[in-house]
Image 1 (spheres, rainbow, N blue to C red):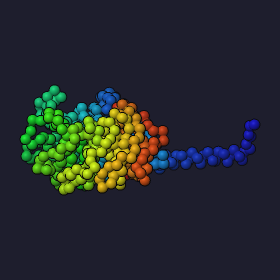
Image 2 (cartoon, one colour):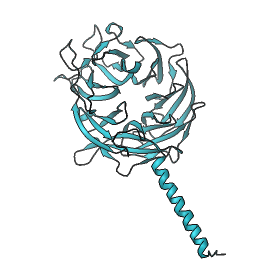
Image 3 (cartoon, rainbow, N blue to C red):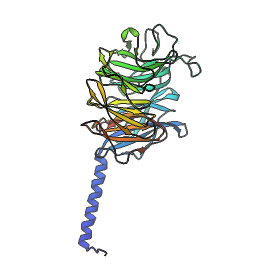
Image 4 (spheres, one colour):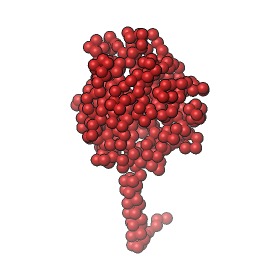
Length: 398
């Protein structure tokens, strides 16, 4: 049976459809809760640059979709890390093969506008963090002519002041060696090759920690620094690093606690921070999946999440007096290497899946920290995603 509509019914139907369309358009404009920036390392474009995918996150479903102008060139080759300015108005992207950091202004629509590029003091930058008016970067090798993959030397840390226009000034000078970096070296064993793996800020920007391993003699470490008001660094613990596992692969801090993932032992080590010094937590270490590659803690400090690269999943934990209790395991795309939580609602979690060429999205249950796949997750990215960063929608200046 075929229904025939009279003219007035057709008008009502058309009005309803128009209203629905208007509501959908309005929703598209107002339901974006975050913009997520995913660096992709595989070369693209005429200059063999890496790319940055920009996803908008729906506040109702967590669904992620790329904005129409995405992707953007990263401004260099092999982007591997990124960080957002404290006011969410700028994105800083580390291009490892060019030894550069590129500053992008973030538009109100999520678009990226490249501004300035600086070179890191060392060779092959691998991690970056921002706190207030300083940017911190870890380089795989110190800036010595003899340092290379064939002839490696220890890594280093550098500090860039952030100027009033959010561009990066010249790196801060380490007066003790008359150079613009702080070497990562073992006291008493200066020839051991120390390989940094990750970097994090704690204590409202007053403390800096770098995870690393000894490629010469074996063993993992965390190097701790006090950050002075002028950006200079002072080694903690009388210059000695804190022993941590075998091969630290990721690091994060809540302010009171520090967590370090070990990719060889497949555990997370937990520490309480006391005036910058680290004291092992009673239940540490905590089991993870195979080859943990990234770790994050939600904004409330109640839950922790570890991306396990080899198992292609995320392990969730509750946090009680710093100790971690495993609560679940959730499947991601293939080989997650980065993880983050949305800064607007603290409700959505996402991973960059290097071999899956996609991004997994989850909704966080704030009662127990469990994860539920976001609508239509995972989401296609460009090739070999390496890092994630996010800003709240409506927080940018441009």
